[in-house]
Length: 265
Image 1 (cartoon, rainbow, N blue to C red):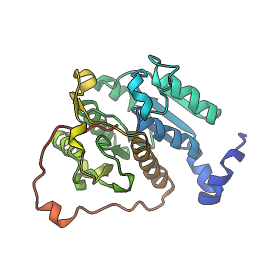
Image 2: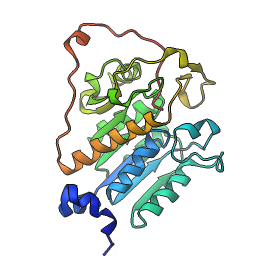
Image 3: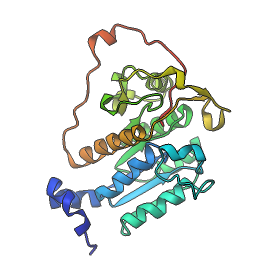
Image 4: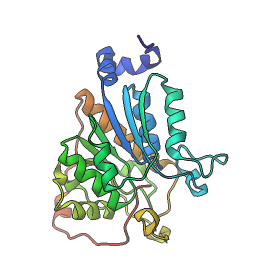
């Protein structure tokens, strides 16, 4: 029998039965950047018994301002491998599967052929994100998806709702548009921000990993997105209510103003 005393403070909130329930769950976390690395750690620290983490990227110096795996000492190393060591150091009893690869349609189908209780989408580019979301919808697995955290500063503007009900987030608009023929976006919970994007922070990229542009990021905001995503997963798995925002009526009547695409982190 595993020693679960390290979860005693969590048990005060959710009870021993809640901890026991989480021990039986398997959560998939795709993307280990600024949002996903923190989200994965929060899921691990909650006591979830089995996790699969997916990311084919390596640490870049520019990641150090916001991504949990990124240090001055590990540039060029695999994020997935670094997170494996970290998660197992937190919970040595965790049943952990690591996919050190980028998410192609074929890889996505292979991964989602397994049994998952929840999918956490923390991908920061639209094409693989839509691939994951549409495949998870086909498999009828509950999903929470992180929207655009770039170009923003205020964590109090974060909201949770169905993807179809998001507003003010251009990244979410593009995801909805791409998903329109592939799956029912109204079944996807989304974490998004109602804050206006700081457009002056935009840079163009080389198009690598499906990203043509990116906004500036601040240390704490992707982590806040990761925490919000993890909270949705844990509350849903335990049957606790998750209050979902309703799009304001004044927003419903307006057509979105499209700008450059935001990125997750």
